[in-house]
Amino acid sequence: MRRAIVLLMGCSGKSAIAGAITRGERYCTALELRPDRIEFIRRIRDQARLPITTARLNVVSDPIPMIQVWEEPQRYTLGLLLNVLHHMGTEATARAVLGKVIDACDTLVIEGPFCAGDTSIGTPAYPNALCISDAWVAAVAAEHGHRLIETEASTMQPPYRRVWRLEREGTP
Image 1 (cartoon, rainbow, N blue to C red):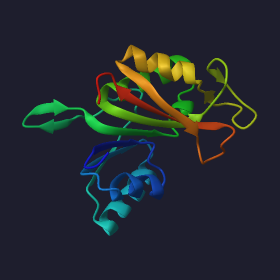
Image 2 (image 1 turned 90 degrees about the vertical axis):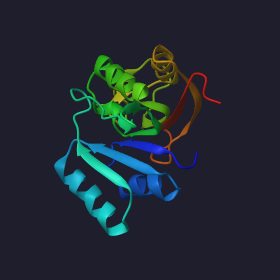
Image 3 (image 1 turned 120 degrees about the horizontal axis):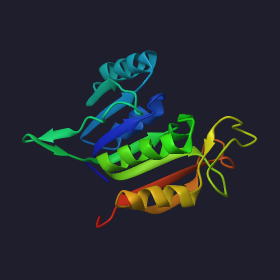
Image 4 (image 1 turned 45 degrees about the vertical axis):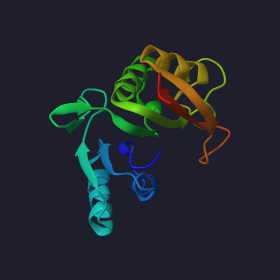
């Protein structure tokens, strides 16, 4: 996917920020809750002269800013929801947040703790985190007009974490 307009949430690492832009994407909106992380993103942006807008956002309570094209709101081409959902505390909150992000994006990549069965709280590696199942991701995606396209082990703690890719129904 080239020349994408990217929504980056959970942008605490330099590699996620640089990776979202250096592959040739046109523009990136980076949203983060922690002020120190926002400042970190701004420093990277300014040093590398990257086309990134940053904003502090509480994904649970704040609306996701949309891209305006000729005064019409547009969805992001690609959303990256990295290391976020398992911090939501409850399945209901995670479902609401994921739905909000899905609605803002045509394609979405999610990364987080994985469980083979039902979505639950805690695994040996993440005792207090919400662990997400493939079936849960697929169900939430379907509720919002997306389909689960691909799953794979995350490079970060592969036995416990997974990456999911969703696309809006009707996307070629």
